Length: 356
Ligand code: UDP
Image (cartoon, rainbow, N blue to C red; front, side, top):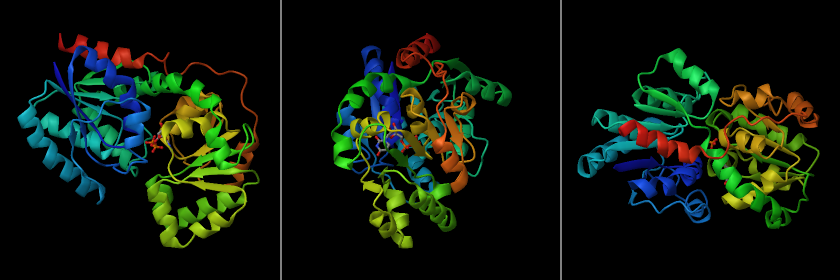
């Protein structure tokens, strides 16, 4: 069978690491990189470190508004599908690349498989939430990572078939976290020691694109009283620079700014951190897999189980709540929430079963 997979940004490269190689043992995969993340530090390094096959097609579509970017992707993917005639199209997660790949395929009557289907924050102001909902309703096979996702899709009565395969990011974490934890190079580079720093990431549009919110983020980081390692997403770096606030972070002794890191360096910092402070979706889960308590700078999350079990706290950008949550002890129990690390195998099996 010929499967055309559309990926485009950092978390999708990580997810593809759990699936692409396995998929190619059974099928022909054509990997299409939309170019949503194109710089080496957000793209090339992930293909190298995680042994994701090199994309066969590069579309070089980046920048612009979400609408413009999605429209350009549709305009490129449509003709590509007409030439390649795949048997199905595989998409991951919740980005513009996800919805563009899904919609172009559905319009060409090609079945869509959505990995990480069913996630909901119930916040339609998030571009990611629109992408999730639309892609789920376009898909024929919806591969979900959790029971919560299954329940969300049942409530929405999606037309496609839903299979709980577990979370492909667990597979990748299981493969790489032990080795990353043992290698302390990234900690040395950042000037921190295991268990005595906070690893922070922030790039959600809702936090960094609105100046008042960005200012709250800066104030929160400046108020922390322990070392903070902050690998800056280019979007966040650009917004801080434009607002004239980057210097304040650079000048703060406790904040160690870094460029966006490769997966291994980042995972080393994550697994050895005392706490993780983030607005990322993927990083909340990775912190959970690594048993590092997480404090999330949002007021909603798709990964509700991490909150229900007490390993994640939603504090939005409220300084007092953040400081309180960062001081709390981790719970005693750490249940297996998102599968056993074999989600990639189940993705391939579900695809095989669906087409036969
Ligand atoms: N990540 C990384 N280097 C960094 C920051 C994040 O390798 O400097 C990885 C992280 O381990 C996770 C993924 O990027 O697998 C998360 O991506 P991101 O936070 O950009 O996206 P989201 O999950 O919020 O959609």
